[in-house]
Image (tube, rainbow, N blue to C red; front, side, top):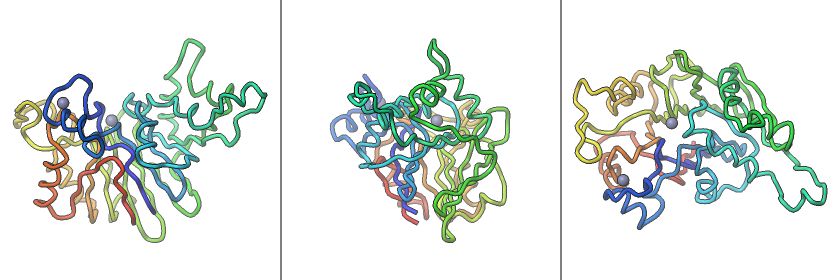
Length: 283
Ligand SMILES: [Zn+2]
Ligand SMILES: [Zn+2]
């Protein structure tokens, strides 16, 4: 399986508009991989994309993606869905409309039932955007998935994160290899046998370091520790699940660290990498 990180950023992209902090100035000057688009992952073997953040069009162009057949949604949060207009950009040929040629080959959209329901809450004054893309424009086809699908020999298991909010952690398996993708809102982290013994655990929802942007100190009783996993929590989850390698994604500008800072951290830990836009993960 060949995965490409289309976006390694968090709910705020890097550079954050207007921000003049060193991380944003560097990202603005040097571009990718110092810049980070919203969080997304692509599986080239089956032209599958996970999530559509606002800047997904720029992310697809940067990552050199040439085809998208299907899209999985991990949850409805805006930083993972607000680029949904990409369906128009992927499949709508503007001038064909005047010739009466309908869009061909709709993108298949997969999500667990609660997430599909949440997605219908994203709407214009005419109704849910998903209804418009599917029924009016014929750009997508929705498929609700309870537990798993198989696409061209790649098995994808949809694991629900415990709690009230509908969130999915995805497990990709093919030819004895396994990648677990838990981009966001995965606290508490689910514990099911299928999540164990992955070759790679790609995990977001994690703040990196105890000192963040502008010297903000995250002490022991800081509320961020209740909302997100710390980096040491992520290492603990990697160990508990016996994942061979941990790749941290959904990296916020607010962590106040540059690509070079993360490269230095990689030297301190075995089997840990920090994602960047365009990163290839082959297994
Ligand atoms: Zn900044
Ligand atoms: Zn997120």
